[in-house]
Image (cartoon, rainbow, N blue to C red; front, top):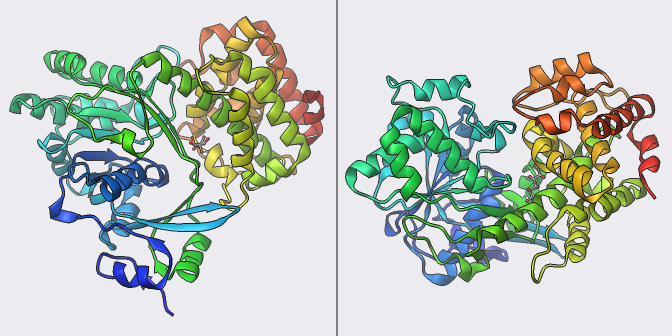
Length: 499
Ligand code: CS2
């Protein structure tokens, strides 16, 4: 049978022909859009949108459907893909047990900001909107890792700060105008809910927005700072980029023609502070860990960012230099496998706080299983991209703590060195690597000038702090790793880092 195009009308037929879970809840005008989400990519559609789908499907929630927003020119692809299929899409969960297909209906509409910036501001300012959530990647926060301040010198931020400009480009510009309107209308501020991988993502979002607002309208800044909430959260679900083969197999196996499905793992986790300024859906009913204690969320974040994303860094940069394509292939290499285990156990674990009811060893074992899942085909270039937002977050703070407090740090330095070397854009076999990064030009120029001397890169002040830059133990260890990688390649160097 020919596959059927995914849309509301075809749903009954699709589900009659194949074992597909589908939304049987009201959509469209029958629900309220309580969440406006900026950055509708794979991760959002595998995480928050799935939790909201479960709330709508199993708990009768009708006032928290999602309005997706795309701010960037490339979001046009999502506008068209979702727009052509009543904003439905398929989440394909893959594991050794096989594939499960679930059609998601929680995204109810989509606004593409370049089409109409005013519509986005009006939507956020609408009384039905209670939460504005974000997956805008690290670079979307304009956060200076060194000073912890907003990058006010950035041209897009400058544009949005200009009092003559009321058609914003950045997330903070939109949040600012929408908050202003809510205040004038006597509404509560919406909760700004960051779902990005950053330690203290809520606190960073608050600081960046309040700093932005202080420059344009200090009174409004005060209102936001005292009344709005920005919960910190740990978010987790490995979500590869959708490949053309995924669409073909969805059509063949489940009879669904979907312009942009997502593929993901069965595992998902979300730990979030219970701080909301205008109400929230009963997230706890669908397995979200809602936590009262701020410190607890920070601890969960630390575990996840340092163990999962930190290990992903060596898998991605080291793996790509060694010529691998997928995460599971790297895990099948006994050298990498041992290195990653020892990195987690010997160097990262000692820097982590104990959390009641959480076994770090079990967490590490589960990570090894998740990384080894061959069915999701997680691409190394996906994880390599945007390293300037990742290494300073996922590796450098662990190195700093390891050096000053807990002990060994040479595997962590080796991991950072693989990124430094990767930036040059050539793998260990001389093959070209397509390096993706918002700061590409600057880092590539510096990496090439620096060679095996890390100082050129470490001197980028908004990425790296003074403390590490001036620590001789760190400089010596990372320089040695860079020399080894340049001379022998990653695979030949790894045994030196394995006990
Ligand atoms: C990855 C993450 O891009 C990356 O750096 O490590 O996207 C990772 O897959 C997610 O954080 C998993 O929750």
